[in-house]
Image (cartoon, rainbow, N blue to C red; front, side):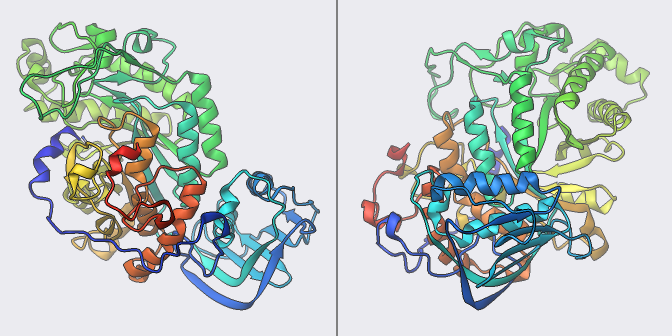
Length: 562
Ligand code: ACM
């Protein structure tokens, strides 16, 4: 992501004035829910004249196998409504029903609300879970609060048939540049689930910090998770670099990771862990320099950019990394394991006699082929363990490993090339999905970022299936995801500010069929959705109109909110 400074030049200079229509100035608590404003928008909605009231007398039933979904609904409603819905075995006023005969697309559901009650039907628990998320968004925003209010809430009558466009609806988070605590990760996952996102790409290792406990190699965290200090300001802003003098540290224990993985599973989110190799390895090599390429001693990097520190392609290093992956696989049930592969500077490989001779022995023509050999070793190892390797689009260089999935970040090109040769891809083009870019061109009002410009409307306009692909190649596009690189996001609040509402826009890109997308309609729904985000306690980036009642109509420096 460090490289994307060079791309900033070619980003469009489209001006973005996003005016949310018809925003009511009423105080939040009394804002009456008026129309259907679900994000992401369901595929098919028929509005009915009738409505249903949820109150103390409303009963809840769930088919066997839906205990998690029933508990999710009751745990969400109880604190907000001030009471628990009484449960019955079958035929509740709110009924969660598994029906294997529906023949809906994967993770689809039906939601029917009329004067008799609410019925959510799906073939899978995931489908029911998404039906519940839609139901919650048919209720007032206060449903996400934890203030007891003895509520009586009207649900508008609807017949909804819904299913996602893509199976990979992802959000990435870099916790290596700036560590984020467990409580924040859980809050973030919950907000993702409210948007029907289902893949959390957890970027756990970097030059600037190693954040996952590996029992066999304890120095990865005792040394690799601590940096002495951090660069102040933007990497390119000053000739003489200044540092804050404050140690930055943090890592997740294996127990914490198990807890987070289980939490995510209950939200139907798969966590894809990323262990970077062969580059972005400086923190690991600070702990275990013997696996580096030129005998250099390192300390955990204190500045941004791409370090030249690179794992050596020798057998002992491959074994070390496989040992790490064994522990990673034991923690993460994900079919996909991310091994990075991006921005590996090969200087230390090029300049090493030892590594040049290794290349000759292996019949490799150059260092791209050496990286390809390296990644193929990992791909085979993961495959032997019934997992699949995923990597950034550099894994195409020098020849892509069998069965590897490509995450296309430098644009759509990597994804196009990979899909054309039959590989699955996840689209993550920086131009439309790098949420570390500025949200406005009025940079003085914004918190410092890496650069770039990615307004909400450009996220919304993204179509993860490039035109260049033939129809029969579309199946290789698993979906897309946004990236949150955290060099300039020291706190959870910063992350939320950069993520929302762009994540809301992306959720619709990933869920709703492209021909049904409509920016104006999305903007109208977003004006209500901001209330939900506010009740969830998310420090989203307000637009110029939000919230009028709190005086943010004036041009205040948004960065001061953080
Ligand atoms: C990346 O931004 N280096 C994937």
